Length: 356
Image (cartoon, rainbow, N blue to C red; front, side, top):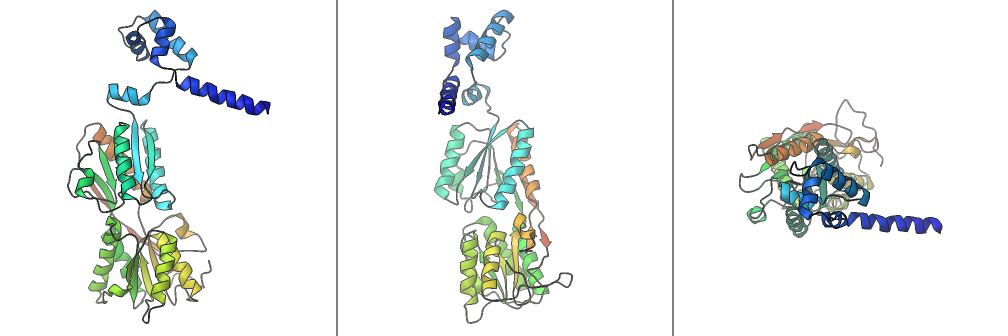
């Protein structure tokens, strides 16, 4: 009980410390607010004796600078906003980690905003981050970025795997069309005959680009594009499972699918195995992203790799360049890579039955 009271007392003291302002220090020392402010900012207009007296009293009282107020004066806050659709997904968490690591080395803090694929929440976060005077924003938009969304943004902005309709913003993206093409080309080379597509949200820029790559590969190799086995849903395992269940119950089901991301592919894999299909001999699956779980022994998912750490690193570097007033509107498109594992036929892989 005594420990609880002590802990609570410390908590209350911390609140008091956090509420100390420049005005409190000025009142305690009977010195003007302006002089205290100048001293704390090491202004040469304050003599050294007075400055030292003020600094020591500020430390004694537990004064903490107000970063937002300081940013209004100095025109920067050393803070960056990061807006992503779903932090629970490995792809976004890996991107976030690389952004945070590089930002920290450059002396920036990162405010993470998770939209949960909600466009209204995305708009709310954009407004909030600007109100907090962040120096810049990195964002993966929930949907194809519409013109109106960016009309009122006056903060440096970098988009990843998203694009604005105008050319005023930096962006970095994987060549999603190329990635979709490589995935389906591989399935065709593995001699699957009827290849479906299970996507995420149909208004997602990256999803639609991957679908475009899927269609281009089918057309190039004279496979029919059957809209009946092209289905979009959500970027989660449940959606992959449910759509796969529907496709496998068709009179003429596919014998392979390209999934819009690895999480969707995992749901599809679960479902295919519940139907008793041998993966990959009866059914082939390719995902997209190459997230961490894709290579574990129980999954061994063939997938399209995005260089996630590199993308996060370059996004923050581009943003800092813009914050410092360097040239804007840099466009970077990175090359995807096919990773072949045990969910597609390959002579170099032991095709024992996968069990999850």
